[in-house]
Image (cartoon, rainbow, N blue to C red):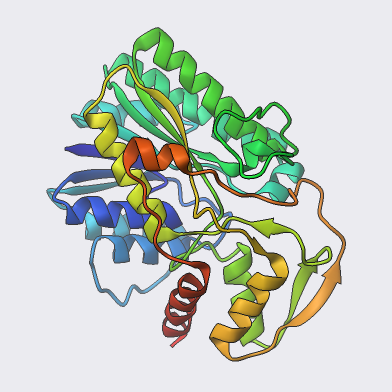
Amino acid sequence: MIYLVTGGSGFIGSHLIERLLRNGHSVINIDNFDDFYSYHVKIKNTLESIGIISDFEFSDKETDIQRLINLSHSDKYSLYHQDIRDKKGLENIFKNHQIDMVIHLAALAGVRPSIERPLEYEEVNVRGSMNLWELCKDFNIKKFICASSSSVYGNNDKIPFAETDNVDNPISPYAATKKCGEILGHVYHDLYQIDMIQLRFFTVYGPRQRPDLAIHKFTKLIVEGQEIPFYGDGNTARDYTYIDDIIDGITKSVLYLENHSDIYEIINLGENQVVTLSEMVATIEEALGMTAMKKNLPMQPGDVTKTNADITKARALIDYQPSTDFQNGIKKFVEWFLRKRH
């Protein structure tokens, strides 16, 4: 199979590509190496995902990315430095490859930044996704997996969150763009018979996690002896999902999509465990053998108070079986973090 993966040099995307290549498939990776965080991280992710061990010498961004493209190219793997907002650029890629399925992970992520840059989030997450669906229509590609988010649930009163719950009340532009993606995806399924699964990810963490996300940020600050930003009273809670379980859920969704037709499904991928902010910090402290210095701050606009995934549908439909509890997941993440520092 030939898979086009958008955002394939990011945290989740690089792990997915690693799994797809290991399973003998061919992959086309589209990533724009956005400045949301250092492009160095994405270059390292890319090299790890394709099994290349290299002491990459960084110079300037454009030169480095071109070197990465040349270094990584093989019969099974192609990398394109491409923004999904650029439909013409995407079209050239679709013309050059016989694509069996699109796995769309690329997005502008983050609740708080979306409040500051809402129009840019709409351009990338809504228009960028529509560009891909338009090209799937034009090139007769009938299989599509899309990354949605637990943020679409907002401050849902019902716990745990089920796919049948009402999600008409997002509380951040990021969440709203993800809800738009689900709705527009259904339009393309209905009009053009594109089989589609929308995966609502619940707070993914693990090796290669984005450095701006709480677990990675807190670990780094604690190790460096700096204060961590501690929002609210510590009782906000998340359903943290270990990266290996997310990749298992995506690959099982791929298999399901390949073997079924006339499909449009929304599926939660979480651990079905809830961890408070205080518990999360304590678990990192224990794994590091260090104590955090907390800077107490008020709750941030757009932040939900709690997430918790009902994974009944995922278990039944794709045999999703998350297996990494939070303590073991944090231990694995900390081991990776400390190893990468040396």
